[in-house]
Length: 347
Ligand SMILES: Cc1c2[nH]c(c1CCC(=O)O)Cc1[nH]c(c(CCC(=O)O)c1C)Cc1[nH]c(c(CCC(=O)O)c1C)Cc1[nH]c(c(C)c1CCC(=O)O)C2
Image 1 (tube, protein in one colour):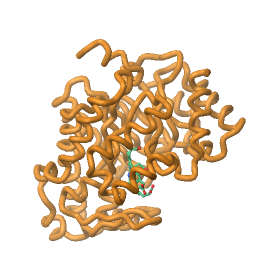
Image 2 (cartoon, rainbow, N blue to C red; image 1 turned 120 degrees about the horizontal axis):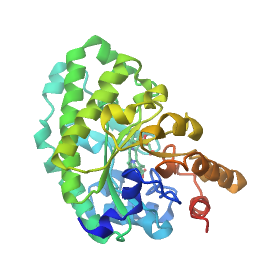
Image 3 (cartoon, rainbow, N blue to C red; image 1 turned 45 degrees about the vertical axis):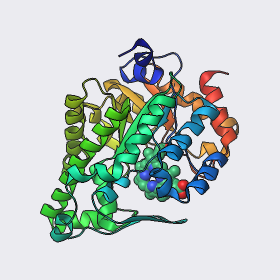
């Protein structure tokens, strides 16, 4: 590994270094709040065509890097592509969100493809990673990602996003074998998917468990902690030294000890916890990422500056990567992103 690579700020923070200015990137940094994203998506035709077009997916990944100089670029793709690679139907309803064919029986689970078959469909994603690893500025870290098994399963079972993940909880209660079989299949596929992203040039990977917050008690251990621990252990054995960020969103008390229990190098925090709480309970185990409320990217002004400083101040005694607590929303003002970065970097 060259010195330039290990000197990247994000990689230093992930190794536990406390930096004078935290490195920064933003969830959904390539997205609809940017006019240049909307133009490229229109050129691609639709969202999924954009995800599977390596040239245009690399272009939208680079757009926020050019505009703002973020310390990390996150591969442009989606956590639901793996469902399609496993044989589910997937489409996006404009203005509504994802729709999928559903998995609610053992027979439907058995009709899915094996984990080893995913690469046929996902090879354009690996090509996007290869292009980015060639075209990114040398100081920018490339982050690959996947959805965590529970979150991906909630979409595959319900066929859409759900407020309380009711259908997934119902299958877990009614047919544990099918539910566990689906979790295991997604876990295996995710290991291979992330491993291919790393081979193509991803320097860090992030696991998004957006619906971890609805898993309580033993369910949190069995379906948020255990699959993440298995994915992380296998990736680290295949790729020694690979840094991994875990995001068990809205885990609450489940955030405590999550890095130790899963082997993650960094835990991303959402806005249901304060930065002070995160520093006291999560940063004690290592690097944390977060957690400015995304709403500030819409409202801006003095409150944005004050809260950005508050987050930095609360996390300043430990390793920290600055980020939002969740994705930036389409109604955000690009000028507010600039104000956040200038505030962080003291410009
Ligand atoms: C649950 C989830 C999904 N996708 C993702 C999650 C986990 C993180 C989270 O909790 O937000 C993760 C994701 N989705 C996208 C990325 C790309 C990288 C990035 O910029 O962060 C990443 C990392 C692009 C996207 N994924 C999606 C868009 C918007 C598509 C468009 O251009 O219309 C983008 C830029 C669409 C998407 N994709 C998904 C939904 C529910 C939706 C519709 C809702 C919405 O539009 O925000 C599934």
